Length: 100
Image (cartoon, rainbow, N blue to C red; front, side, top):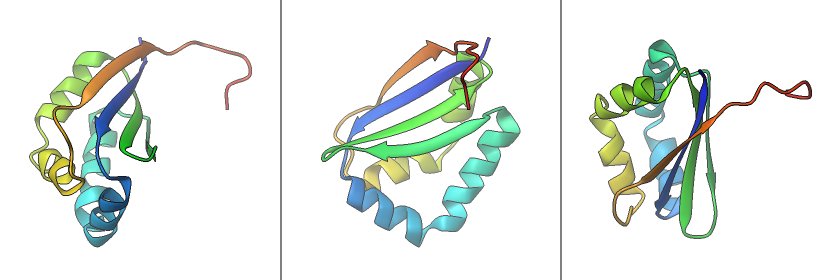
C-alpha cells in the first residue's frame, strides 16, 4: 500500500539550499537512487527553522531500506545544521478522485 513519508527536522533551510545547489550532482544521485528504489514523488519544503522532506513510497519498509543505505544523507543534514534526529512519519495514501 503506497505511503506518504514526511521527514521533519529542525534545521536551517537556507543552509540546506546553499549546500544542495553546490552539490547538485550528489543530490541528483540520491534522487535517482530513490526513484530506482521505488519512490514516486519527492520534494523539500521549509519553515523558518524546519525542513520537511515529502515523499511517496510503495511502503514504509522500502523507504527505511533506502534511507539507511544512503551515506550522504547524514552529511546533508549536518550541512543544514540539523538539530537532533529527524522525525519520520508515514501516512496511508488515499485514493481520491480529485488527485493531481
